[in-house]
Structure formats: structure tokens, C-alpha cells
Image: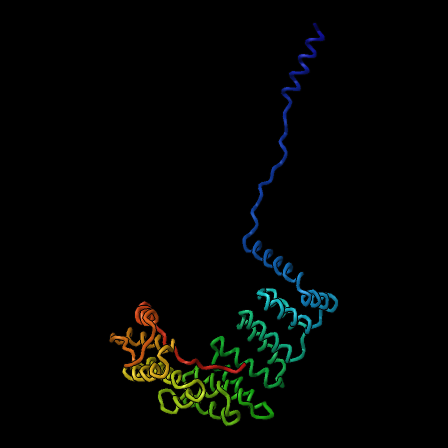
Length: 320
């Protein structure tokens, strides 16, 4: 009986023994930005694994970390593959080892292509401040980058410095200075620079187009545009200038001439719809000229849906 009692007591004590639960840490979801970056890097690595050029450049960078040529080439390759963040990182590393102005220009151009123009111009500014005898090409690119970030006064100074430091006149340097002046609204000064560029390179389409824009609503502007892109585009460009100046009857006259040469000119049709939207008069096509029914429909009704109308001229261009 006593033995039965002891067995019963033992069973009860075992059944009442406390179980200590094991610690359980809740799973914290990964940070979305970090997760996206990790995925981006992994994708880049995966993409590079199948690219023999990337593999070779990676090996070169690992074996010689200060090889700026290998780094900029790898950065350029990543940029073409669609990985601007990785490209920018290698451009930054290359700049840390670089001493040659050409490398800094390459890095600045790469960062600009990666959508980081502000970082590019700051990096180039820092280099030029410590290297006052840098070549004109570096100054020219500094001017381009300052123009792009809206620092036009500094850009003008750099363009002029590039011209002064150049051992021989270069048409693209004068064109880029003219482009800067055009952005500042100084059309007469810009015209003079474009004319200098054309004296050095009479066949430069970019300088001739820009001169047409600087000349504005003069007959000479049409002549310059026509020599480059034909009469339809030339008269459309003139129409765009008139539209920006609020001279709608003159714009309609130029568009009538443009569509007379080319009834299907998309830019001219767009501008005709735009004039109709701005002056409230019908979009009338030239007599004895025709375009497809659907293009005409899109021209008239598509233009009226545009809440922020913009003319379609030939835009000013810079020479990189």
C-alpha cells in the first residue's frame, strides 16, 4: 500500500512539473530601402557574372584598387547596364585616386550621366580650385555642368576661361558660351558668339541652329534654319518664336508656310493646335493641303487638352 502511494505521488509530481517556454524573438521585417539596395547590388552582381568584360574589370580593380582606368571603365559598363548607383560609387573611388585632369573630366561626365550633375560639378570645382593650370577642356566641362545646375554666371566665367586658356580658337567653346548667354536671355551677345563659332566651322549645324534662335524673328534666322533642316522646319521654328512672344497672327502665317512645304509635319501641326488654344480661333490648315483625318483630329483636340501648352521649336544645343 505504501509503495502504491509513493508511485502515485511521483506521478502527480511529474504531471505538475512546470515547463519553461523557450525564448521566441519576433521576426523584424527588413528595411525596405536596405532590401531594395541589397536586391539592386545582387542584380548587378548577377548581371556582371555573365559579362566577360565586367568580370575582367572586376579582377583588375581587385588586383589594383588604384587603377583609375579600370574603375572608370567598370563604372561606364555598369552605367550602360542600368546600374547608376554602382557606377557612381566607382566614379567616386576613381576620383579619390586620380591626379590627371582628364580623369576628373571623365568622372564628372560619368556622374552627370548617372543623373548626379550637382555632385559632378562640385567634384570638378574642388579639383579646379587646387589645379589652376587645368586644360581648357576641364574648364569647358565645368561651364557645361554649371549651366545644367542653373549657375549661369559661374558657367559663363568658366566658358570664357576655357576660351582664354585655349592655345587655338575652338568653335565648340564659342558655341557653348553663346548657349550660356542665350540661357541668360542675352541674345545679342549670344549671336556674336555663334557667329564666331561659324567663322571657325561654317558647316556646324549646331552653331547655325543656335544662331537662328539668337536672331529670333528675323528673316536671317529662317535662312540659317532652312540651310540646316529645310523650309518646313525653318518656318515652324520661326512660328515657335512668335508663339513665345505672343504674336499669334505672325505664328499662323509661318505655320501656313511650314505646312505648305510639309503637310504632315508633326511639330507644325502641334503648334497650329497650340495657337488655336491660345487665340481661340480655329486651327485652319493651308488650302489645297491635306493630312490624315486621325492626325487632324489629334492635332485639334489633342492640343486643346494641353493645360500647359509649349511650342515645338528647334531647341538650342550645346557641344559636349
